[in-house]
Length: 592
Image 1 (cartoon, one colour):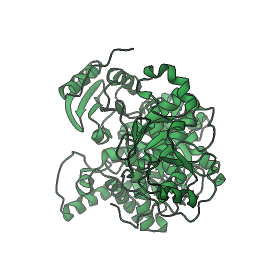
Image 2 (image 1 turned 45 degrees about the vertical axis):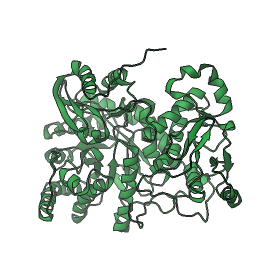
Image 3 (image 1 turned 90 degrees about the vertical axis):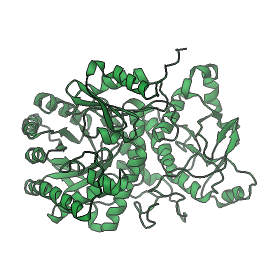
Image 4 (image 1 turned 60 degrees about the horizontal axis):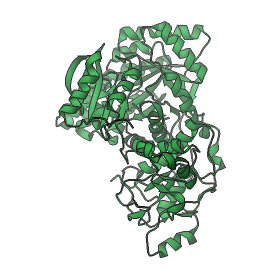
């Protein structure tokens, strides 16, 4: 369990945006009360300046406020000058960020030409060999000293040239030193970033921000919360802005839902000053998703909610996932609560709309009709309603009443805090009678609200009301459960967004792998364009498909490479063979 004094948010019931110092990236301000900034990353090869310029201009036109580009080596970083000059010659002033892994000399070249440099503490100076070693304090200090020696020149250049920096930890690329001292944990991610921040501060440098990315939304949420809690403990002048992102989120609805769970839940708690949605799609499609996620906060939507007063402490530990305990109820033949699978509810109207084709809905069937469930709807501020449930001899399924002007996440936190644990809770995506006409907006709202609560262990059943189309509402429900890791009903994919480091066509390859393996329920497959985050982000995956060299693929079991330099046109079949070797393969059922 975490220390009881750790706090990442002053009020878990009423929205307050975290106050930060401003960080300037060119002419764009991050933090310091500025609107939340949207950014993305080029998929074009950094060596192709014309392609990078075209893509950057397209992103800027779509509303991208900061553009990131990878710089794998010093020679490649030299081409950033031509990319910058081409963008500026077109009359566009969008700031550029160089993404650096492994190569301090690439960072020293890149900082000449871009407004911001992203460094990954796990691989900027540390070597990662997945070695198990017991570090003495002296050995640990010696490695930190070496890291400082490598990092200080970049800090000094950033000061001299007026550049910004992101200290961006990735769950998938913690150094061996951090892994052996702290483990593959959110705390390890935080400590890795703070080492670099202390070095920067010792040089008098403060124009930086942090990120704590992971492909698992639960890990990502906990890491950011833990980071902010540690910054709060360190003092008021550690008020650096935060960059939010779920790395390797994937594509399609799954990628959008996973991103919304991680990014949306933190924005709802006032954390986050810039966001990047990482989709395995063309970068242009990331922008509208990010814009929709930040829009409510940039437009002041939280001020429209009623204030929650005299609330008790929340019922869960924000830094340690544990599912809320409740009694098990059987509702319409479906077990709900306790340690049972979280079921999907729907309304009578939607049930009737799909009743004629339920046998064709596959994995997206409705399980319980709301009106037949006996659920009790209450206002969690109504102490008399809460008291009547205390007096009830039997456990009841409870949810929030529609029409309340409360934020969904806060309302359910309050319900969980006041309600006896024996009563299971039905989560809703919205407390309004109707949703938007925009499917993506409905999907993101549902994923943010329901997904955030599930990641805190709250919720024994779910219903999506905001999306009117019955089939789509059911699909959203199930995909949120999958992305939050509470109900694995289909193959799970960890797929990184494409960038200039990618060694094969990620989008077509991911679709090819989905087509071949999409029936393997409960199997988790990682598809990684390069080695930067591959092995670490695959820690939770069963199998991995990773670009090792141009047109060559390495295959992994867990985070161990077992097959090397497989020609790309053979690699999907070889992946299937690997899955078969480990007894996880079964043939797809015949199509209906």
